[in-house]
Length: 309
Image 1: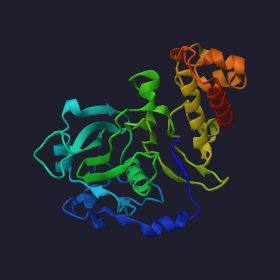
Image 2: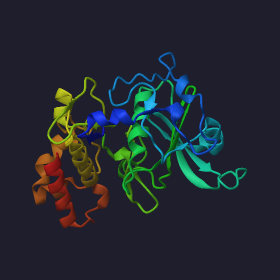
Image 3: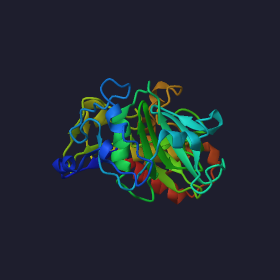
Protein backbone atom coordinates (compact mmCIF):
# COMPACT_ATOMS: atom_id res chain seq x y z
CA UNK A 1 0.00 0.00 0.00
CA UNK A 2 1.22 3.44 -0.82
CA UNK A 3 0.33 6.81 0.58
CA UNK A 4 -3.08 7.64 -0.84
CA UNK A 5 -3.92 11.31 -1.27
CA UNK A 6 -7.50 12.39 -1.80
CA UNK A 7 -7.83 14.43 -4.96
CA UNK A 8 -11.03 16.01 -6.15
CA UNK A 9 -9.42 17.68 -9.15
CA UNK A 10 -7.61 14.94 -10.99
CA UNK A 11 -7.61 16.69 -14.34
CA UNK A 12 -6.22 19.94 -13.00
CA UNK A 13 -2.86 18.43 -12.14
CA UNK A 14 -1.89 17.78 -15.71
CA UNK A 15 -2.18 21.46 -16.56
CA UNK A 16 0.56 22.36 -14.10
CA UNK A 17 3.25 19.93 -15.17
CA UNK A 18 6.66 21.05 -16.29
CA UNK A 19 9.62 19.15 -17.65
CA UNK A 20 12.89 19.03 -15.75
CA UNK A 21 14.51 21.19 -18.43
CA UNK A 22 12.15 24.04 -17.62
CA UNK A 23 12.73 23.91 -13.87
CA UNK A 24 14.69 26.74 -12.36
CA UNK A 25 17.08 26.25 -9.51
CA UNK A 26 17.76 29.83 -8.63
CA UNK A 27 21.44 29.36 -9.30
CA UNK A 28 24.05 27.09 -10.75
CA UNK A 29 22.44 24.00 -9.26
CA UNK A 30 20.40 23.30 -12.40
CA UNK A 31 21.75 20.88 -14.95
CA UNK A 32 20.27 21.56 -18.36
CA UNK A 33 20.77 18.07 -19.75
CA UNK A 34 18.91 16.26 -16.97
CA UNK A 35 15.48 16.03 -18.53
CA UNK A 36 16.58 14.73 -21.91
CA UNK A 37 19.02 12.15 -20.60
CA UNK A 38 16.50 9.84 -18.91
CA UNK A 39 14.72 7.94 -21.66
CA UNK A 40 13.20 4.56 -22.21
CA UNK A 41 16.69 3.32 -23.05
CA UNK A 42 18.14 4.43 -19.73
CA UNK A 43 18.34 2.10 -16.76
CA UNK A 44 16.12 4.62 -15.03
CA UNK A 45 13.03 4.45 -17.20
CA UNK A 46 10.75 7.47 -17.04
CA UNK A 47 7.77 5.46 -18.20
CA UNK A 48 5.45 5.49 -15.21
CA UNK A 49 2.19 4.87 -17.03
CA UNK A 50 0.37 7.29 -14.71
CA UNK A 51 -1.82 9.97 -16.24
CA UNK A 52 -0.98 12.33 -13.39
CA UNK A 53 2.75 12.27 -14.14
CA UNK A 54 3.54 12.09 -17.89
CA UNK A 55 6.86 10.56 -18.84
CA UNK A 56 9.92 12.54 -17.75
CA UNK A 57 7.95 15.35 -16.14
CA UNK A 58 7.58 16.66 -12.62
CA UNK A 59 5.27 19.18 -11.03
CA UNK A 60 6.64 22.69 -10.37
CA UNK A 61 8.56 22.55 -7.10
CA UNK A 62 9.72 26.11 -6.31
CA UNK A 63 10.61 25.22 -2.72
CA UNK A 64 13.07 22.52 -3.73
CA UNK A 65 16.74 23.02 -4.47
CA UNK A 66 18.18 21.30 -7.52
CA UNK A 67 21.58 19.80 -6.71
CA UNK A 68 24.28 18.69 -9.09
CA UNK A 69 25.69 15.20 -8.61
CA UNK A 70 29.10 16.77 -7.94
CA UNK A 71 27.65 18.75 -5.03
CA UNK A 72 26.21 15.65 -3.42
CA UNK A 73 29.42 13.69 -3.94
CA UNK A 74 31.22 16.42 -2.04
CA UNK A 75 28.54 16.56 0.66
CA UNK A 76 28.82 12.81 1.33
CA UNK A 77 32.61 12.61 0.87
CA UNK A 78 32.10 10.74 -2.38
CA UNK A 79 29.50 8.47 -0.74
CA UNK A 80 32.09 7.19 1.68
CA UNK A 81 31.05 3.96 3.47
CA UNK A 82 31.26 5.57 6.91
CA UNK A 83 28.54 8.06 5.90
CA UNK A 84 26.07 5.26 5.06
CA UNK A 85 22.93 5.51 7.21
CA UNK A 86 21.00 2.59 5.77
CA UNK A 87 19.54 1.04 2.65
CA UNK A 88 16.25 -0.28 1.35
CA UNK A 89 14.25 -0.94 -1.81
CA UNK A 90 15.14 2.46 -3.26
CA UNK A 91 18.87 2.29 -2.66
CA UNK A 92 21.24 3.67 -0.03
CA UNK A 93 20.92 6.67 2.27
CA UNK A 94 24.02 8.68 3.22
CA UNK A 95 24.72 11.36 5.78
CA UNK A 96 26.06 14.57 4.30
CA UNK A 97 26.90 18.18 5.05
CA UNK A 98 25.99 21.24 3.03
CA UNK A 99 28.97 23.56 3.27
CA UNK A 100 27.23 26.81 2.35
CA UNK A 101 29.75 29.25 3.82
CA UNK A 102 32.90 27.16 4.11
CA UNK A 103 32.98 24.60 1.27
CA UNK A 104 36.40 23.35 2.29
CA UNK A 105 35.40 22.30 5.79
CA UNK A 106 34.21 18.70 5.94
CA UNK A 107 31.77 17.77 8.69
CA UNK A 108 30.40 21.25 9.26
CA UNK A 109 27.34 23.01 7.89
CA UNK A 110 23.77 21.75 7.58
CA UNK A 111 23.43 18.00 8.12
CA UNK A 112 21.39 16.23 5.43
CA UNK A 113 20.35 12.74 4.40
CA UNK A 114 20.98 11.84 0.76
CA UNK A 115 19.02 8.97 -0.78
CA UNK A 116 20.69 7.58 -3.90
CA UNK A 117 18.74 5.28 -6.21
CA UNK A 118 20.42 2.02 -7.08
CA UNK A 119 20.14 1.46 -10.83
CA UNK A 120 19.28 -2.19 -10.15
CA UNK A 121 16.63 -1.22 -7.60
CA UNK A 122 13.16 -2.75 -7.64
CA UNK A 123 11.91 0.81 -7.39
CA UNK A 124 12.77 3.37 -10.04
CA UNK A 125 11.98 6.63 -11.73
CA UNK A 126 8.26 6.42 -10.97
CA UNK A 127 8.84 6.25 -7.22
CA UNK A 128 11.51 8.98 -7.34
CA UNK A 129 9.15 11.16 -9.36
CA UNK A 130 6.28 10.58 -6.92
CA UNK A 131 8.43 11.61 -3.98
CA UNK A 132 9.52 14.84 -5.64
CA UNK A 133 6.01 15.67 -6.81
CA UNK A 134 4.27 15.01 -3.52
CA UNK A 135 6.78 15.85 -0.81
CA UNK A 136 8.00 18.86 -2.79
CA UNK A 137 4.55 20.44 -2.50
CA UNK A 138 3.86 19.56 1.14
CA UNK A 139 4.93 21.28 4.34
CA UNK A 140 3.92 19.83 7.69
CA UNK A 141 5.69 19.52 11.05
CA UNK A 142 5.19 15.75 10.97
CA UNK A 143 6.54 15.14 7.47
CA UNK A 144 10.25 14.74 6.82
CA UNK A 145 11.25 17.80 4.78
CA UNK A 146 12.50 17.20 1.27
CA UNK A 147 15.21 19.82 0.68
CA UNK A 148 15.92 19.07 -2.96
CA UNK A 149 16.86 16.52 -5.58
CA UNK A 150 19.38 15.62 -8.27
CA UNK A 151 18.42 14.31 -11.71
CA UNK A 152 21.38 13.53 -13.94
CA UNK A 153 22.46 10.79 -16.32
CA UNK A 154 22.02 7.46 -14.50
CA UNK A 155 21.72 9.29 -11.19
CA UNK A 156 18.54 9.98 -9.20
CA UNK A 157 18.96 11.36 -5.69
CA UNK A 158 16.78 12.95 -3.02
CA UNK A 159 18.01 15.26 -0.25
CA UNK A 160 16.19 15.39 3.10
CA UNK A 161 16.54 16.97 6.49
CA UNK A 162 18.59 14.71 8.75
CA UNK A 163 16.66 12.93 11.51
CA UNK A 164 19.00 12.46 14.46
CA UNK A 165 17.15 9.72 16.32
CA UNK A 166 16.59 7.34 13.43
CA UNK A 167 13.36 5.42 12.90
CA UNK A 168 10.64 4.29 15.28
CA UNK A 169 11.41 0.77 14.10
CA UNK A 170 14.95 1.01 15.47
CA UNK A 171 13.64 2.06 18.87
CA UNK A 172 11.04 -0.72 18.96
CA UNK A 173 13.06 -3.62 17.58
CA UNK A 174 16.67 -2.47 17.31
CA UNK A 175 18.40 -2.08 13.97
CA UNK A 176 17.24 -4.49 11.32
CA UNK A 177 15.36 -4.90 8.08
CA UNK A 178 11.94 -3.74 8.15
CA UNK A 179 2.75 2.55 3.20
CA UNK A 180 2.72 3.46 6.73
CA UNK A 181 5.01 1.45 8.89
CA UNK A 182 7.42 1.89 11.78
CA UNK A 183 10.50 2.13 9.54
CA UNK A 184 8.88 5.08 7.73
CA UNK A 185 8.38 7.06 10.94
CA UNK A 186 11.56 9.00 11.73
CA UNK A 187 12.44 10.89 14.91
CA UNK A 188 14.26 14.21 15.13
CA UNK A 189 16.49 15.37 17.99
CA UNK A 190 13.45 16.07 20.19
CA UNK A 191 11.82 12.72 19.30
CA UNK A 192 9.21 14.46 17.15
CA UNK A 193 7.73 11.83 14.83
CA UNK A 194 7.79 12.57 11.09
CA UNK A 195 6.59 10.49 8.15
CA UNK A 196 9.02 9.63 5.36
CA UNK A 197 9.33 7.55 2.19
CA UNK A 198 6.66 8.73 -0.23
CA UNK A 199 8.06 6.79 -3.18
CA UNK A 200 4.82 4.81 -3.49
CA UNK A 201 2.61 7.89 -3.12
CA UNK A 202 -0.28 8.16 -5.54
CA UNK A 203 -2.91 10.75 -6.27
CA UNK A 204 -5.72 8.69 -4.85
CA UNK A 205 -9.49 8.89 -4.66
CA UNK A 206 -11.59 11.40 -2.80
CA UNK A 207 -14.24 10.62 -0.21
CA UNK A 208 -15.55 7.04 -0.52
CA UNK A 209 -14.38 6.41 -4.06
CA UNK A 210 -11.59 3.96 -4.73
CA UNK A 211 -8.51 3.92 -6.91
CA UNK A 212 -7.80 0.57 -8.56
CA UNK A 213 -4.21 -0.45 -9.14
CA UNK A 214 -3.08 -3.49 -11.10
CA UNK A 215 0.10 -3.75 -9.00
CA UNK A 216 -0.34 -4.11 -5.23
CA UNK A 217 2.55 -2.28 -3.60
CA UNK A 218 3.58 -1.83 0.00
CA UNK A 219 4.37 -4.10 2.93
CA UNK A 220 2.28 -7.08 3.96
CA UNK A 221 1.22 -6.81 7.57
CA UNK A 222 0.63 -3.07 7.17
CA UNK A 223 -1.49 -3.11 4.02
CA UNK A 224 -5.26 -3.08 4.51
CA UNK A 225 -6.75 -6.54 3.77
CA UNK A 226 -9.23 -5.17 1.22
CA UNK A 227 -6.39 -3.53 -0.71
CA UNK A 228 -4.31 -6.71 -0.81
CA UNK A 229 -7.34 -8.74 -1.89
CA UNK A 230 -8.85 -6.42 -4.51
CA UNK A 231 -6.32 -3.74 -5.44
CA UNK A 232 -8.89 -1.09 -4.49
CA UNK A 233 -7.11 1.77 -2.73
CA UNK A 234 -9.23 4.08 -0.58
CA UNK A 235 -8.33 7.27 1.28
CA UNK A 236 -8.92 5.35 4.50
CA UNK A 237 -6.51 2.55 3.50
CA UNK A 238 -3.55 4.17 5.28
CA UNK A 239 -5.63 4.40 8.45
CA UNK A 240 -5.24 0.63 8.75
CA UNK A 241 -1.46 0.96 8.57
CA UNK A 242 -1.54 3.51 11.39
CA UNK A 243 -3.54 1.06 13.50
CA UNK A 244 -0.90 -1.61 12.89
CA UNK A 245 1.87 0.76 14.02
CA UNK A 246 -0.06 1.48 17.23
CA UNK A 247 -0.26 -2.26 17.94
CA UNK A 248 3.51 -2.53 17.35
CA UNK A 249 4.10 0.29 19.84
CA UNK A 250 1.94 -1.43 22.47
CA UNK A 251 3.47 -4.88 22.06
CA UNK A 252 7.01 -4.21 20.87
CA UNK A 253 6.42 -6.91 18.24
CA UNK A 254 6.66 -6.80 14.45
CA UNK A 255 3.54 -6.61 12.30
CA UNK A 256 4.53 -9.77 10.44
CA UNK A 257 6.92 -12.35 11.87
CA UNK A 258 7.06 -15.88 10.46
CA UNK A 259 9.31 -17.01 13.33
CA UNK A 260 6.27 -16.88 15.60
CA UNK A 261 3.76 -19.80 15.72
CA UNK A 262 1.64 -19.85 12.55
CA UNK A 263 -1.48 -18.50 14.27
CA UNK A 264 0.59 -15.52 15.44
CA UNK A 265 2.37 -14.62 12.20
CA UNK A 266 0.08 -11.64 11.62
CA UNK A 267 0.26 -9.42 14.70
CA UNK A 268 -3.11 -7.69 14.26
CA UNK A 269 -5.02 -10.94 13.69
CA UNK A 270 -3.45 -12.39 16.82
CA UNK A 271 -3.68 -9.37 19.13
CA UNK A 272 -7.04 -7.90 18.13
CA UNK A 273 -9.11 -9.86 20.72
CA UNK A 274 -6.81 -8.55 23.48
CA UNK A 275 -7.26 -4.87 22.66
CA UNK A 276 -10.78 -4.55 24.01
CA UNK A 277 -10.10 -6.34 27.30
CA UNK A 278 -8.22 -4.40 29.98
CA UNK A 279 -6.87 -7.51 31.70
CA UNK A 280 -5.84 -9.24 28.49
CA UNK A 281 -4.14 -6.05 27.30
CA UNK A 282 -1.61 -6.27 30.15
CA UNK A 283 -0.52 -9.71 28.97
CA UNK A 284 0.51 -8.48 25.51
CA UNK A 285 2.19 -5.17 26.48
CA UNK A 286 5.86 -4.75 25.51
CA UNK A 287 7.85 -6.81 28.02
CA UNK A 288 10.73 -4.32 27.84
CA UNK A 289 8.52 -1.81 29.66
CA UNK A 290 8.47 -4.17 32.67
CA UNK A 291 4.99 -2.97 33.58
CA UNK A 292 6.10 0.67 33.86
CA UNK A 293 3.67 2.54 31.64
CA UNK A 294 0.51 4.67 32.12
CA UNK A 295 -2.27 2.08 31.92
CA UNK A 296 -4.92 4.62 30.95
CA UNK A 297 -2.85 5.77 27.96
CA UNK A 298 -2.25 2.15 26.93
CA UNK A 299 -5.99 1.49 27.02
CA UNK A 300 -6.70 4.59 24.94
CA UNK A 301 -4.14 3.54 22.32
CA UNK A 302 -5.58 0.02 22.30
CA UNK A 303 -9.10 1.35 21.71
CA UNK A 304 -7.89 3.58 18.90
CA UNK A 305 -5.93 0.72 17.30
CA UNK A 306 -9.03 -1.47 17.50
CA UNK A 307 -11.08 1.12 15.62
CA UNK A 308 -8.41 1.62 12.95
CA UNK A 309 -7.60 -2.01 12.28
